[in-house]
Image 1 (cartoon, one colour):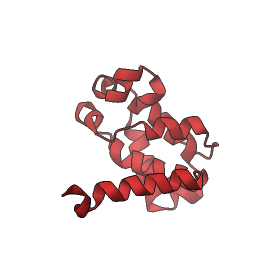
Image 2: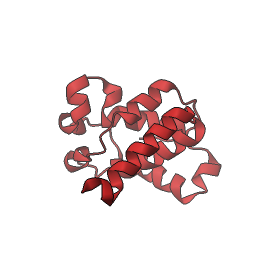
Image 3: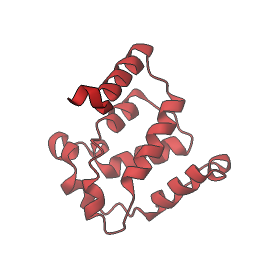
Image 4: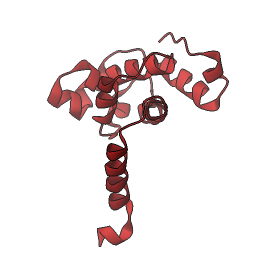
Length: 130
């Protein structure tokens, strides 16, 4: 895939990694059959291929919309798409980079940030799992 990432982003390790991953995707569509959210919703933007387009768009400097947040949030990060990818796209790593950039450019409402933090902490704290 052709990319047009800004030079200041390409100067970072994160930007170089994202560019390499984006360029390795040939958009063949093999990942669609293994993606649970695409299987249920049937929306191209809720597939790995669609999310790669969204992440590419954000990294190229385009505006982050609420829809972009919604589509990236719906990914379960199960990485099953990586197992069927003939190009070896590291989708999970690209998704981590994309989510980080999206969070920086489009901060969430404070109440939403608090609830996401509470869920993340409660699910990753050992005392809660007992």
